Amino acid sequence: MFSSDHNAPLPPGTCRASSRAFVPGEGAAPIYSALVPAGFPSPADDHLEGKLDLHELMVKRPAATFFCRADGDSMTGAGIQSGDLLVVDRSVQPQDGDIVVATLDGGLTVKTLRKTDAGWELASANPDYPSFPVNEEDGVQIWGIVTFAVSAMTRR
Image 1: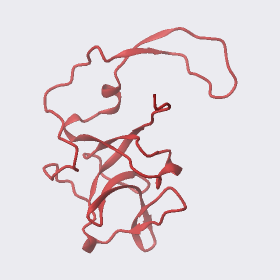
Image 2 (image 1 turned 60 degrees about the horizontal axis):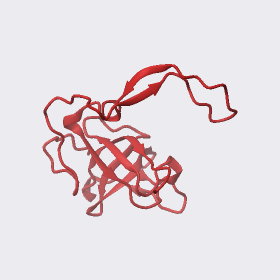
Image 3 (image 1 turned 120 degrees about the vertical axis):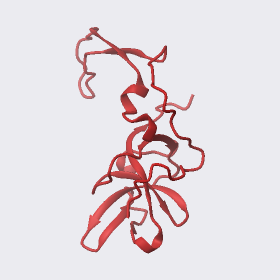
């Protein structure tokens, strides 16, 4: 049911990662060892831990990773907003509860893969949207597992 063919075509607007080794460049930014409380403020901690390269953090297997953007609000309950950048790994075997990019009705969708008593379904994370049963006959394919969703906090 789940495609593991890494030679299968990628979604429109994406391309395969280069097989050349990735070398972090000037894009690496400083990362501080202090955790930033999301509740009550604490005294500033300015201990520099090192450099952080987001590509290195988010792309574990470059040859099997692609990026795409979410469109719509069916996954807001999972923290995915319209316009978010999704990092998708094709090499990870999908499991119950994973957020996946899949083909459905001839197009792509991002949904939560769920195992139910009736079989598998692609579940929305917004109660205003339905879930979809996954049937072999429907041609549903899992393109990959969403490993990160990057949200813009400002549109400036």
